[in-house]
Length: 178
Image (cartoon, rainbow, N blue to C red; front, side, top):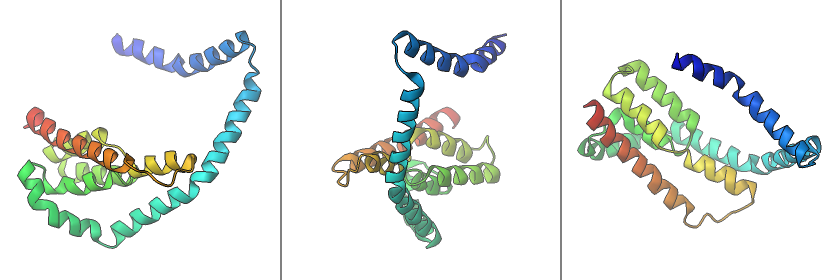
């Protein structure tokens, strides 16, 4: 019963939101279509401005993985991961997540295929995926869109938040799933 209600609401939610926005604009005497096209034009201009930053991030990620640096770093950090209770197999995902969401998702998929969705490794990787952010991608997009070249404290703060997410995922997964 509950699932039917949720499915019914979800099937009309987006059209209802769009209709509400248009109706609100009409009531407030806003030229909705002109505002929409102006916003779309500005969005396109932002996309053009951030392309160089995105290309740089993607090239750096590709070079990092292809060079074998990810595997080397994983083997060097495995004593630390075993100390905190993180299986070494999950470390590549933890290291890839701040760099690339799709790369991290690929690693999570591979871990789940190899170890199973019910395994500690699969669960920990999935919790970690949801507990961390694609830090460098987000910074490239946001800072690139407004042409900020000096990130100041944003990178260390974001990486500390990622570390907190990783450690929380390890602890919570260990406590909940053993």
